[in-house]
Image (cartoon, rainbow, N blue to C red; front, top):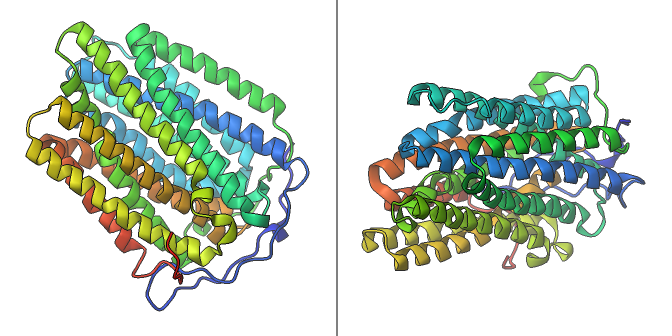
Length: 452
């Protein structure tokens, strides 16, 4: 059963910017106090459904990437397979906030899970006898459906945290960090699961098993979802999805370039490079490379999720006011910018793939993951801190539209930069995008004299 949320849980905050042109924080809204009765049960159910979805999402990405790499697709062709997923994410996030406000958060959560089942069922029908053009078009369409599903599920889960989390003693930062960190750790397990399933049972049986498992999760969520999430509201206008708050607009621009900086090496460049570096060209060598690449990607995402979950403690957020946390966002992304630029230089100097270069790149990208995770966690907290309970689905949808646009930009540039300039250009492009994220936050992100 759905219930309408209490409009007094959050207050609208007057948009404000500081003299330096960066993200500023107005006076904090009234502390909403402890979580409402039943909120923890609703939060746990939403989180479990989100975990199940992200497990399938991570596994599907590795299945598609490694399967089509083995079939001989070029980096640009592989990048095209994921473009439908990212384009759909932009359109979905633009409308998802309005859909949730109009029809309720549980409706959009269930719709996301159901569409992912449909996408998996469609991919199971892929015919290996089709030509390259037909295969790419079909997988792009199925991936687009999966992209719609992912962003409906994400927006529903993240918005629920704003409405359910306690406001006292940094409760919002802790709850959103746990949700975001845990889902990324689960997605990392999905990367390894996808690689293992491809090596063990093959593409189609793996897809069918995932579809059946996720359908069972959807049924369980629909049967046992406790009350606590808001119902729909008639009269919600689509034009309300666009934010007039400059803090949210700056943060959304920074988010776009931040995720572009990750995906420009994450989607195609590093997986293809590592597969070439680790495989000896034999069938057994390819299988071993699948496990190693999937294992690294899984380790990266699991570590990323763990750092996200620990970010409130690492930043001492419980004892720091919102302006200081906002200021930390710009300093951390400034540090992030240096890492891929340094790795690009090493890759250019190192030349041909070697065990030593591969090891250094892996360690450098793990460091990138640590700093990136802190940045991402800061953003995830700030978007919920800046919005109000009345606008949460709209502002979160708008913000994640920028997130999806960044992934689309990164996906496009991943295949293109790797094809044109190999790994050095791929990593240099990541550094440039991280620098643009730093610039998007303005000269100052908040007034603070403390280090992050």
